[in-house]
Length: 116
Length: 115
Image (cartoon, rainbow over all chains, first blue to last red):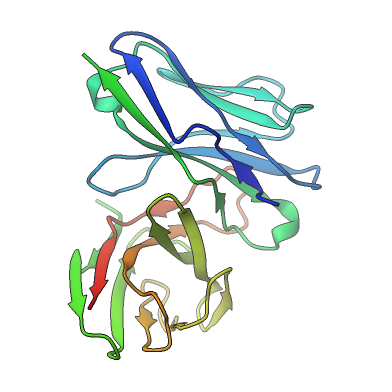
């Protein structure tokens, strides 16, 4: 079974609108962390936001927020006021305590296209 | 500025040749990683190292080898045993032992094409 599932291969959003990118995860650990990364066409991976499994508040970083629903095992990324520069691949990733290392397991990504 | 340098950006090789991808970091991070990215597959872990002179296989280590002789360097060799070596390779690093929230920092990647 996949540990990270991103069900939207591609998404379109109008400039200045908000968009939600879905991410569900599978773990038996009680302690874990969830990350979102952005990958523009140039290829670099840019860290956006982090949510810990024990964090009671949803994480926010500027225009990015993470809609964390622990019981549903979902960690959706919300981008407010989309900009043309937001067009990129977006990856959800998880770090598990039981993994014994600091590696991240990634989903397959969602390609976001912002329309002027 | 601190960061991770991968070189070269593009690499072309003939089938049957070994090739080594370079990864250097000046972030003073203990842990380093190699990921492979194929279209529609996301990132998959090849090898990781949490300390000098020690490394562990990831999910797709077959056909690859690494070394970690210095904290700053974690080169990846793609051997002729790797069946489908053409891919985008990303190197990353992170602090270790400082909590779950420390993100991975990535290099800009090396695109390897084998014909």
